Image 1: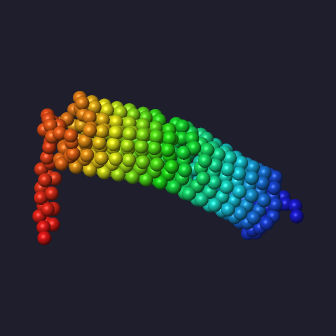
Image 2: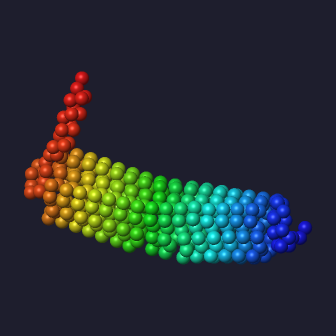
Length: 355
C-alpha cells in the first residue's frame, strides 16, 4: 500500500492509528501529525521539517537518518524506537519522553530541551550543540559514550548512574545539575560555572576542576583521588565522607566548606582560604595547609598527624581532640585546643550513658 503524507495527516485527525506499515523516505514537512499513534512503523529517512508531532506516540518505530529540523515534538513519546543518525535542528523538544531507544550519532542543534527524559537509552556519539534551552533534562541509566555537551549551558539536568568518562564537557556551564553515582574519572571541568551541582557518590578520580566556580556544590561520598581543584571557588561546598586522597586544592576559596569524615591524606590545601571551614573527624594525615587562611576553621576530632601548617594563618582555629604530632600547634597563637561547647556535650553524653 502506498501512502500520501497529506492523507496520513488527515487519517490521524480522524483518529486512525498506524501499525506495521512503511513510510520510509517520505516527506512530512509541515504536516500536522499531532496526537498520532504509531507502532512498528518504518520512518527511516523521513523528513519531518516544520512538522507538528505534538503528543504523538511512537512504539518500536524505525527513524534511522530521519530529519526533524524545526519540528514541534512537545510531549512526544518514543518507546523502543530506533533513532540513529537523526537530526534535530531548531526543534522544540519540550517534555519529550524517550524510553529504551537508540539515538546513536544524533545531532541536536539550537533546539529547546525542557523537562525531557531519556530512560535506559543509547545516545553514544550524540552531539548537543548550541542548545537554545537545556533545562530539567534527565538521563537515567543511559549509554553516553563519546557524547558531546560542549559549550552548552545546562540547568537542573540530571545524570544518574552513567559512565561519563568519554563525554565532552568542554566549556559546559552547569547550574543545579545532578551527576549522581556517575563515572567521571579524568573528566575536565576547568574554568566553568558548576554552581549548586550535585556529584554525590560519583567517581571523579583525577578530574580537573581548576578555575571553576563550584559554590554550594555537593561531593558527598564522592571519590576525588588525585583530583585537581586549584584556584577554584568552592565556598560552601560539601565534601562529607568524600575521598580526596592526594588531591590538590591549592589557592582555592573554601569558605564555609565542610569536610566532615573526609579522607584528606596527602591533600594539598596550600594557599587556600578556608575561613570557617569544618574538618570534623577528617583523616588529614600528611596534608599540606601551608600558607592557608584557617580563620575560624574547625579541625575537631581530625587526624592531622604529619600535616604541614607552615605560614598558615590561625584565628580562633579549633583543634578540639584533634590528633597532631605535637601539642604545640594547639597552643599556638590563634589556636583553640579545646572547644567548651563540645566539652559540655561530651560530658553530658558521658553522664547519660553511665549505667
